[in-house]
Length: 632
Figure 1: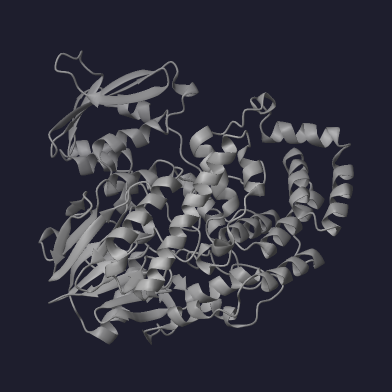
Figure 2: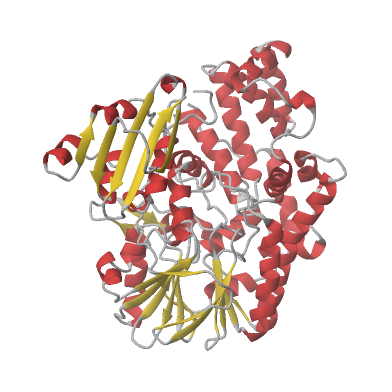
């Protein structure tokens, strides 16, 4: 194992140029980020009932010092802003808790209680944020919760601010955009294991905090490590212009599906002259394709919804706030902010399409595209979370797919086989590493990372290659303005030196699994079928879901598990199970004891119950520890 190195001369020089090229004398963001501070959580940590640290904002105290050469100065500035923590007054009845998770919690005081917007990721951080608010503003009951969109950092802490019992009794209502539950559970279950593993890289959750490690993720510092929860919405919002009055507070909604999330909405408070932009306009360039993995987002519709927000609400607003970062005050300033954000996504979309239609590939466009000066000089358009480079490639992917049109790229060898051939053609691993060290000394780290990766994949036990690759990724991280790029590079270096960090955060939390619809349950099971092993199997099972009055049939054939409403004239199944939906979830996804459930009558079986065990035998388990920077 090698230790982290100092910044190379090439990175020191590159970071120095950043200082000269950007308006570091502009302190408006510092003033806005500090405005309205009532009190910070002291100490700035959240501990669960077992003594586990769920959140530690104090670990970022080093960001108050001068920027070291191992961090891009622009990212250091952003991280210092994002790491500010505490309860803030946005306006007379609007408050935010910032710096207690990746996202913000916003609280709107009503006639008798408080409305909570986006209750963070974890039950524990949600509860800590609400407690901080109540300590300074009084023990107001939570009368409503609003989820702005379907990402977990905007709903996972809901049971820290209210209870399922209060929601069921009508003491607290829960609002979300239409399609919220469907998208929330699909994202966290279907590819949840892979996304959570890559999120460990994206957010640097396992990296040591410090100038050679994690300094933040641009959008927020990192993700909390507590218990994600979910309470299903009681009200779904589907129409722009729809209004609700919650605890005496009037709210007008703007639907923005397909922007930062497939299910998302902004909203306006006409009596408060305040505009909530969810995650559609924050103090950075956002992701069009997040590095952890997701569906590609649509920058064209994103830009158009920002135009709509400007036209509908900007002139009537005195303050704009969002689910990340700090607010913007003043009608003129927030209008300019929204306009530049709109132009940012519109420019990337239109210029990428222009080049696509001239025959350029995604990687070529990403290398060549530059933002207009007005955008480049605005701090909030910088790629601290998304980046121009990977967003342009995402736009290319959205329109053109993975293939760039060159037939030489149509059927390339997979990584290990390609690496072995590259290394052989280059004269063997010793020669590759010799030349790579020369390139390293010249500061050509992008090239070194590419060629040494061949050696790592061709010879996974080659310690010299792993160490050189770790040193190289580290330098790339030190120079990155983008927080998630830095975390990816440094986590890759960390794993090459120390072994896998696995998945530090919880994937497929029980509350999220329990929110799956019956159809989604069978979809989730179908994704785990080991096709080749199941080629010869034919299993038909009927499912009578008593509490939802559904009669489903699943059929495994040709290695594919399909599900559908059971036809009235269908031939008899191999087995039929009668049970309630919660028991279905327990049996198929939650590890419930089927024999015990049959014994106590919770499950009634006709036919051969062993057919379910046979089906289960064809299912694979996801791997939350899969390799990323090595082949295995």
